[in-house]
Image 1 (cartoon, rainbow, N blue to C red):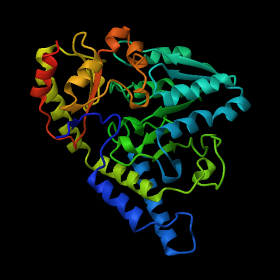
Image 2: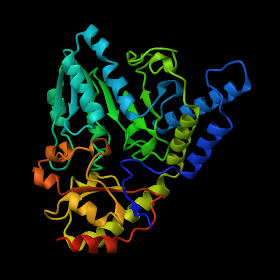
Image 3: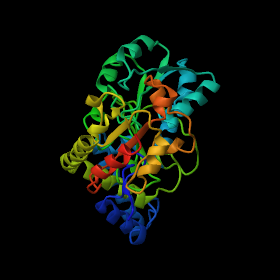
Length: 377
């Protein structure tokens, strides 16, 4: 038997309703959205516009504020690097981010530094959250952009977005959030109108890999002055040219709509799994990373004494499939930059594993998992 999949922060299974839509637009409604001379193209265009509405509705945006991308990594790059020309032209070359961002934000920030921008990186404490007061102290008149993730991919800790938006209320800096882990799950946060740019990935929301979106809220009548990183075709308001993957987009739209519709049922199932896990693991005195009061219901970043995470994962691999960090950096065995930023030593960080599940996760034999871990202690 396969082990129970508990790595949903890396990628999620396809929701059955999403799979149905995906297959329909792959096999039956396969027209090109850009074909305007026949009914196949018209139906494809209708599917894309419907998906745009479905994604926009999650954050109370409008369809013309949504562009489709290949995922949050591309959305992050467009949001950060796409503002560079405006920053140079306006004399605002200061960017603020955090030390716990995904590499898809940290590396574009490094690229901006190489072309003359200054980047300030806010720290976190053991809670895993930034201090909005530090953000306020770091802001300058020439600050162009603030980029803070909604939910951390390794710890599941939510950042104080309401306080961050309040801090920026009277400042012109654009606010971007990498919402790959929170879109469709932590719903109210992303409705804050002060968030200008929102990056999302389909495969974190029970949709396929290879599709995502960037929400770009207007300020009054003014659009965020992004410039494209690639050229050709003019699709997606010229910011993301290329033939639209209609099947993937339709699937993402369905996933967004279902996430809102089934929010309470999904949260209830995730809380049940969390409570069962914590009850079974309690005798092992687990040390949970970050402030649990700000954690998402579907993820635990946890250590058991000084037990090495690699040894733990090998020991339970026939029972559960888990990870010890971001899937994007799992090939490197360096200690997590997120956990180190929270004050952990290398040994402490290397003891942590990430366990993440979803509403589609079957019942887990947590007793067997606890017994296996106990045998290693």
